[in-house]
Image 1 (cartoon, protein in one colour):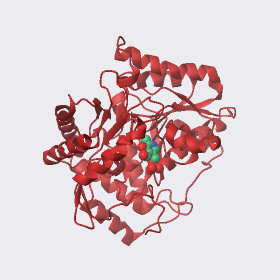
Image 2 (cartoon, protein in one colour):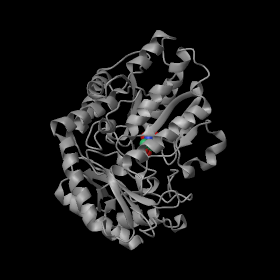
Image 3 (cartoon, protein in one colour):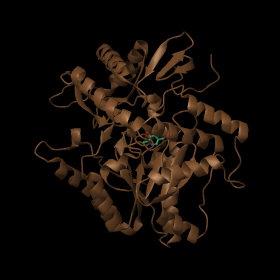
Image 4 (spheres, rainbow, N blue to C red):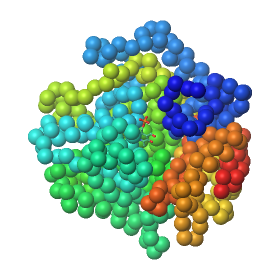
Length: 439
Ligand code: PLP
């Protein structure tokens, strides 16, 4: 018996008791290779000494001091570190405790920005179908995952959704990638015009779609066109890099590969790498100046913003990534993992697509490769794969299987940045057995 309301109360879970590099160890001594970083969190594995020591040292000095009284060194240093590396124009950081809070913060900063400018009539966010931005009501409202929204639909914000840039299913056979990217980006413009540009606050998108579609990057040029459309109509671009950011794609910020900078960018997960709960919202100097020059402060705040110990952990995560040149390893092992997946699953009858960037990779499973027909979601294929993988000693993150038939089941892989060739081989070997056993 347990006194916890678990995520899946009917499923018994193993008891995690220790970590060893990319492995989690349970109370029976079984080792699980963490091929998904949990949910794309544990980018340094589970026993990174420098991060553990930095957290201990901060606890010895000062665990926490409320930010209405003090600032603290780790949060100032982590903010400087991120801003020095952030896309042009992002000049300030607001630290929170996770991804949902980071997105709530971005939505409210965007609304207050226009409020300060006297544009009170702006009230709509446009986001994309088949996206996930978090569980709190604001973040859930911009999210476009029908399953996660369903129960709460009547109490969500009035947001509007357009198509994701999901070439595997959306691009027509006779269409170039460029034309497809333009077509889906233009849906955003049509939606802005339909609502009236003067009523729209911003457009929210995951730079690389994570949990809902399984590591789907946009086609080249899509985000450049989105940026142009937002600028043309004076609306803000909010990129959610909670899952895809902080090095996961091989770049510290996933949007570096798109050649654009958003007005607001959120990150979490890899920022604390699981050693501390922390998220962040980066904002442009223009938004900051407008708010600080207007009412003078941001009408928002959580008890744990700028938490000293969380920021000390996050800062050492960043320093470790640079000291050990881990983004280069993400690129190297990402290419190796992708090649190994192509070799193992490239001709598999039920693997329709292998995609992603860096160590952020997805497989889409289909009943029929030719027609791309998804499996019936009632088969709960993703739950079966997860169970089989755990039995093999592998953590992976299956999802999808939406009832609308707009996407198949997928398996998301997001292993720690510290993996080497033996782990690449182990992931593919165990995943192959798990998928085949689950089908
Ligand atoms: N945004 C994205 C893209 C995510 O993948 C997630 C979590 O999976 C969130 C936001 C929410 O983050 P959290 O669970 O830390 O609140």
